[in-house]
Image 1 (cartoon, protein in one colour):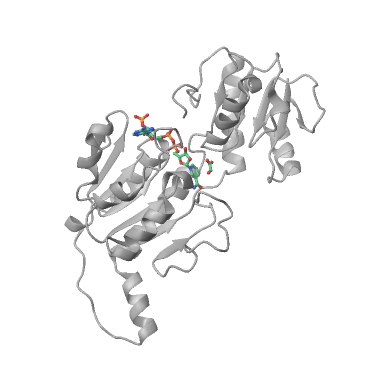
Image 2 (cartoon, rainbow, N blue to C red):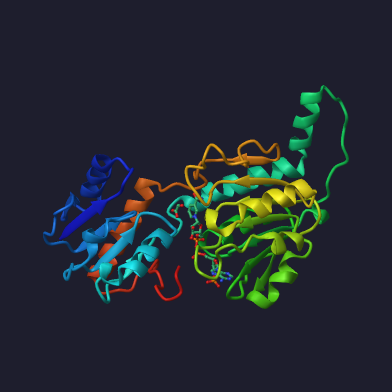
Length: 313
Ligand SMILES: NC(=O)C1=CN([C@@H]2O[C@H](COP(=O)(O)OP(=O)(O)OC[C@H]3O[C@@H](n4cnc5c(N)ncnc54)[C@H](OP(=O)(O)O)[C@@H]3O)[C@@H](O)[C@H]2O)C=CC1
Ligand SMILES: O=CC(=O)O
């Protein structure tokens, strides 16, 4: 079995070693421009078009992350990039859900316990106990209730917050109120105090966090964007912060990455920024999933994690 690997930033030598250990029967190589030799499987992130196109022997392509928007947008421009019938798999959880839970829970607790307000008071040398927030006024709404959104919901339920989610199909997560479809979006937003975004980037979700949506949240709402920068209109977010509608935002992803030095988000006192690190690919877990999936495919089974190319996630 031949496996080709391409990632623009990962330590390729480390990954090839780990892949050899997990799949000792496979010949694994780094793909380099001009390499058209035989391959059964391709492991990729932001792959050059020529890496995949015309490969008639490919049995599957694995995205080395959870979101497949960059591959799908390339596929739209170069429809022959993925040979017909070759399935695309993505990483489902593989250690990312726990990271998302850590990020979301720590930030929600930060706002709930008013540590942001106490930080401002500290800078002013003010000793002033503030009123507590109650959980009843701290409803958490999660846009996207799939692998990651579902796990984030579970962790916030464990902290006793009222939690609701919004997805295309109805969910049945314990103690999470499920809203499904466009026609239930307004009801989902109404009363949501902390909005957490974990949607995939598709034509339906681009720009979804805009002025109209933010206006429908509870007053003094907070936003956490963990999915993709294109979901959120940064100007609308800044306007909502400055008008007092929004209290704060925690952003991990941006419409341009790295976030340009000129962006007003850097200097806004109520915006916190992390550099797209909410949940990174964990090699050991990712390779365990990929090797398990390859074994399932070789046995003729249909493993989990296949991307629905028409749906776009
Ligand atoms: N910042 C970071 O470090 C990382 C960011 N991400 C981002 O997180 C995203 C989510 O990942 P993951 O949970 O694995 O994805 P999933 O595909 O498992 O979940 C996506 C969820 O979004 C819902 N959804 C999709 N389209 C719509 C729509 N038009 N209207 C309403 N709901 C919709 C789906 O609904 P349904 O269940 O009904 O299909 C599903 O619940 C990734 O696509 C990626 O962009 C991922 C990893 C790291
Ligand atoms: O943003 C990261 C991913 O895995 O998707």
